[in-house]
Length: 298
Image (tube, rainbow, N blue to C red; front, side, top):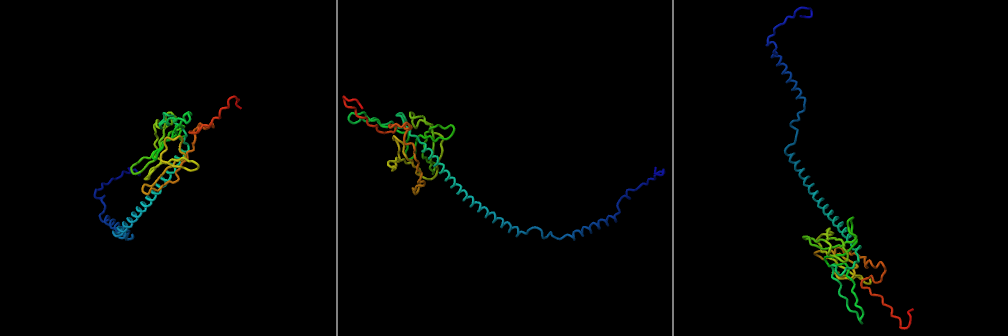
């Protein structure tokens, strides 16, 4: 029914009537082609000028290769010189630390007398005195034993919470392939009855290492003159000076002429009581002659 109350008349439409008119389709296609042609003609023709030619690409690769090679050479040169300089700084710093460690060890060395049962041989038997006097007892040996390649002594330079108050320090020269090492070891000091070699040395520390010769020397000072020797063994007192010799393997030139260390302990701890007989080998004061008979001593 329609709006006016009349019935709507439906018409049957054939399928062919819904098809698009071919002439109309051709006209729309031609218009689309013409509009696309105008758009393409309005754009600049840059297709043939875009990109690089083969010659330009090869030239760019050559320039980039030269830059990379130059940068690699510069990096290698700078790295080599930087490594050489850093190695020199490390060697100098290591030498300074080794000198500081040795200075502390020898500066805090102790004048300790060994008992006859110690590691060092006991003193020689007493010699009979002249005119029937009592034989003189030789002084006890000091806890210091060294030669040109090793030295053992007692020091109080220990560092650390668990370190002993006094330690036995061993410095030894050891080969390491084509180089030479100066190795420091330590052990607790167990007293003069035990000696120097009863404790087990541990805590190995390489103080110096390099292609040079290392040797030790010892000196006593008398009247301001130092007399040097290569062995300090069986003495009643420690040396006054210790010298570390570093020499070039080929030329023999000394590399560290100022590596001398002073041992400050020139007397045992008993001398703190101001007794005259505390020094080893000190002669006793002469006894006063007995008073004459029949007279009271004044």
